[in-house]
Image 1 (cartoon, rainbow, N blue to C red):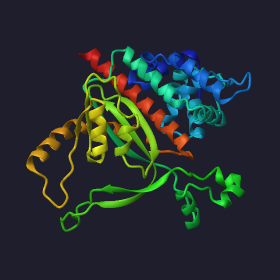
Image 2: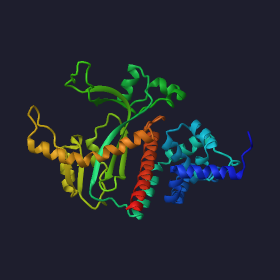
Image 3: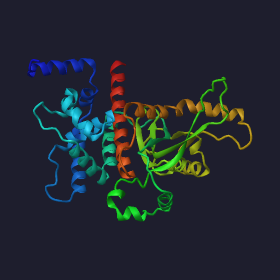
Image 4: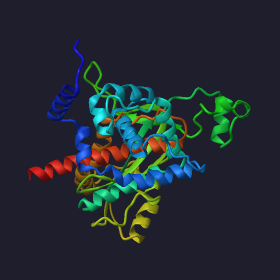
Length: 359
């Protein structure tokens, strides 16, 4: 095997560009330097010692987290692929002879941002970039939630009872190493799915209820550009509806219409939206033990055409980034989901720019 030289690397990178390197496209449309002030503040906040800045550039490290999220990689796999892939190196501005952060460094950087609560600020920073580029929240907003799986816990009945009461089991308190591996915030819930057609051609009349453990990602997108504008992370057992009143609705949208499914239909939510001058387009529920009136069926069907757009966001996230929590605790889960939301908005921003270029 002949040793590759500088021009061989340049030729390979040119081929990658021709094949469509998404990371290179990110570098063209996103000014990652806008994140630097927020990253510096967060790192200083999470580590009060003087001279506590990381040995690697914070923007480079943040871009590594984006690579990791985009490809659903573990820390160890991230380290390996940065060393292995020219496209990753180019995105990070690294040469073949440059030092690459190891898995431990990636974990520490993400953990420092997590403990500083930086993900909200970083998300808002990129949302400001979108607004400055002309992508303002427009035509109303659509709300929905999806379940995000987390590693299942093997707890005794006594431990489960303690957790339900908000207590830390005594055995965990006595063993800090065990406590650090226990997720006290993720919860079990039931995930309902349509029953499949049977061998005889019949379809069961009832849906399947599948136990699910983890968290829930709540989002609000704008109708026109389908960008995530507001978001929140809770445990999987939390109801969707009450989250509407907890900061998921934005005041800056050019329209006041709000779309959501029947889980968000309640008197409290309707009163809240009326007081806040929002126009409810939330699906109406079927009357108890009565058939759905035809006019409500038609109304819900019309709303579904618009509301379904938010489901495409979750489908994109799960197919592209996996949307799976590998970590322990809601703080780290929030970081993971927040990064996934930033990556989605970057990918959507890239698509919108391409559409505008063609138009």
